[in-house]
Length: 592
Image 1 (cartoon, one colour):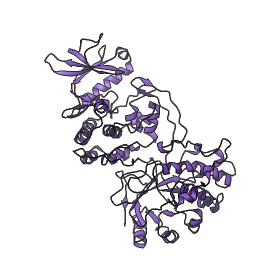
Image 2 (spheres, helix red, strand yellow):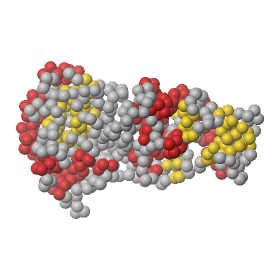
Image 3 (tube, rainbow, N blue to C red):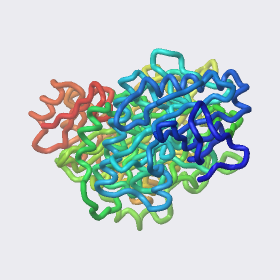
Image 4 (cartoon, rainbow, N blue to C red):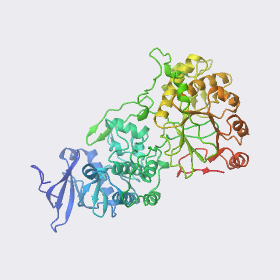
């Protein structure tokens, strides 16, 4: 592109011969030195040259870019951040941006995708070795040269040994490719943030679609923070790699050395891309224990985003997020304006007709318990349980775990105040081990209102392709005997089971050996049992459920006892107590 009227003819001794691009903060020109060497000259717009905060940011960009040198970055050759109109010159890299290539030619396939992925990992290696976090890895900041990609634009990067610059009142970044921690703790991001951005970028390169996208930057940021990525059309092995990169927890993402090894498995040639169900990272913060499950704590998203000059006012989010598959079931659905239950709180009239479609999981198979974070199941695994906030595992029997008798930690406000159990003084009763408010299931009216809300989650499980539902904390009444009774727990479970059966889902009894004798009357099809060997409960569950029992143990002793006593008839797995995703510190997955 030629120069425009009003453009400078030279900058810092370089002759400017044309425009390469422009943005909200400046213009990039093609320049030429006296010897004929071509450079890309980034010149700051005059209004920003008068802003000392922006000048500080530009100095930071120059410093960061100078610290980085490598085959897959564009090195700085000259700069003057203190000039009347600040500028920086980098080596000119002929080639289009990744965003232009995907927009004009379509997604990358085969060798092109493999070269891009491995080149970006090497670029990030060089960047991180220099003590820099890029923070704005996106398709328009990747130039596709003949010999591989080049990462450019360190405008919002920061050195890890210096305080990150956050412009007053705004977060700086590009929401579809930002990491969750860039929204919540922008001064504390690490190299793991760039790994998250790499995952988003590779999904875009492979499909032309961004894994997090909304109708506004605010909604996109919300999805980055709280929702699972859209990985439709991403074929294995890239799907599994992207899934791990896009984990909400920075500590759970793979390091660059591991990424380099796994990305080498990408095919060199173009093959057929078979659509598979998306695998989504589960909510973070899950823990394990007797009667536990995964959970997500919702917090207010109060951030202003600045992207190419766009600022958005802070907005607090208070509603529970809905998956795209269950978006029609808004928070509070299932109750009328008066608070009375809707028909969805009870059994559907078509329940008996749908019951024939209910299929329990296969017996005595390899299985995995992934309520603390989703990941690709090991070879031979036939059954997987995941949090309802994650997508089902492709190609296996998937069980959807929901917290049914207690509110998610910190999410009491999502429930009507009178649906929270209270003591004689009117204070909410908590399960102090997990800091979760207990739901008040003592009356039929309240149980139906609670069921109406929980059934929206069950609807989401069915819509996303799960085969069964696992209502957790069935045993809450055993921890609060002065308030709750077994019959009340069974009454709520009957409502949930009837609705799940109407949706074609089998229903698991979670722990609660005290109620195994009533399992058929309640409508429970199989059992998911934690530590039944340690608690000497495996036999009771095996008898009640005709060996259709999925056992989780958390210790070597428990696994040994379960395998020696029940390994020939029940499905047994040992997981770590935090049930973290594969690749995370502390991850344990063992079978008989």
